[in-house]
Image 1 (tube, rainbow, N blue to C red):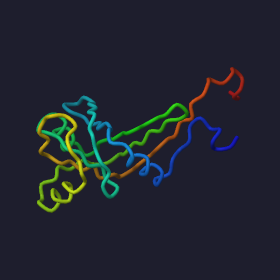
Image 2 (cartoon, rainbow, N blue to C red):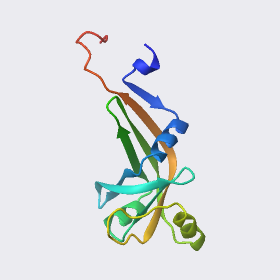
Image 3 (cartoon, one colour):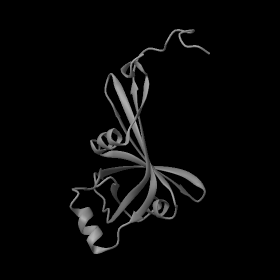
Length: 144
């Protein structure tokens, strides 16, 4: 079976970064008060890190009070889909040069609310998977 015949294929780092750089809606996963929370955010990739804007509140608190966060983005068409997960740490940008750099990324809120804080997720690991859609195989088609 060739790699295009495989229903799930692991992506290398380069392909994962290329795919996640082409979409702008992802999910931040963090822990707040002992509970896992997931927040949809619009984002950009800037120099192999994830940059998003947020307001004061639960999302910001959860992102910066934990050593580790997860960030996931995905996309699909009629034939296939993909998912990229970034494991890393989130940091609110305070230094003027960091904020200026973030402002150059062209990241704007999607909804009519003020998002005054820039947060950068610095990756420690990136993993990606591509999924080829198709019918479920017949019983007995795979050993086991």
